[in-house]
Length: 308
Image 1 (cartoon, rainbow, N blue to C red):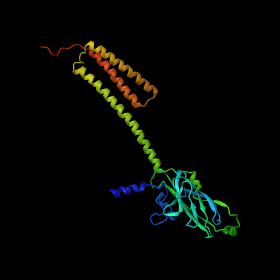
Image 2: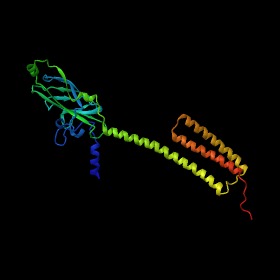
Image 3: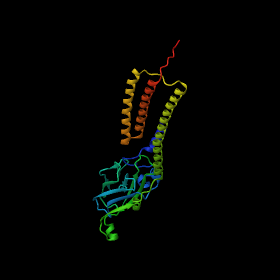
């Protein structure tokens, strides 16, 4: 039972405080977040990093901004690594990875993080970066609704860009993913069906209660009418009630019926839920029936049963 419980708990545990470094023998920065989104990268996720130099200067620190975008999933996490060439410095909302202090991940879910990168203290040649971004749907489960993508890029060695392209060593923004998908959100068929089923269940619950309690009320009224009929037809009519008892009883029941009738009318006029109005209506009918019974019993002839 303990093993089964652990197996059931495992799929619902997300990683809001950072993804694992090792994913079953492979690194997440190499293979991606394969537990999410069917195990394959998705162009629906646009992973961007800005402030990236074309070539680094030795020991210089650069401020970079990691951005995660998706049409419907507005939060998630990231994992970035420079293969240990320089030093990645955490910023707000990010942290070093326990299993690899040279890498950074999110410390809390989000879609925008500012980090810093300190270039190597000497020319080590081109520096390769790996950045994984995971946009999740927020339900706390690894499922098809989560989407992720991988961005790899290189910062050239000092002077390499000027020599090769004769360009300034300026900062740039690098992205991967399909920007058009951000503006055309695909509707999840499962979510649409779940919403439809919820609507059916809501209508059934509301109308089912209405039909049930209305039918029950009609059955009660019909039973009372039938009882009156059988009493008059086969039972000799209602028993006699002395007027000394009938008059105060009729006044009490009449006052109660009037109060309930006023309450019922006010509830109907105010548009209160049908359940309240139905209960008050039934109580009003019951009070009116009490007045009716008092009257017919007071008018019933006296009968003497125990005669010798």
